[in-house]
Image (tube, rainbow, N blue to C red; front, side, top):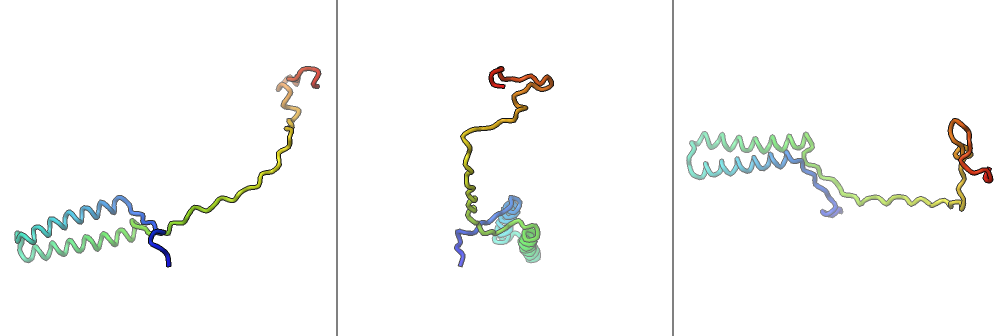
Length: 112
């Protein structure tokens, strides 16, 4: 069984905005219903619109993958590459010691 701490929930910003707007509209609707400021038909329509908002919101979030639950895996260890033995000397190509175009040597005559 996988633990709860190994799950990562990713929520897009627009999903949070949609939920906040839904909660605010719900609070306004419940306040109006409880204060008896609406007729019976208006209350029914208001409740139907609220339920429709949450159902469509869930459907849109599901369709657009607005909320994803993923397993969080620890980063895989990088394979260690064995270091190749370095030679004690470093070789250079002969053309590294010649001026381009004139073929004159950069080194003094005793090193030629």
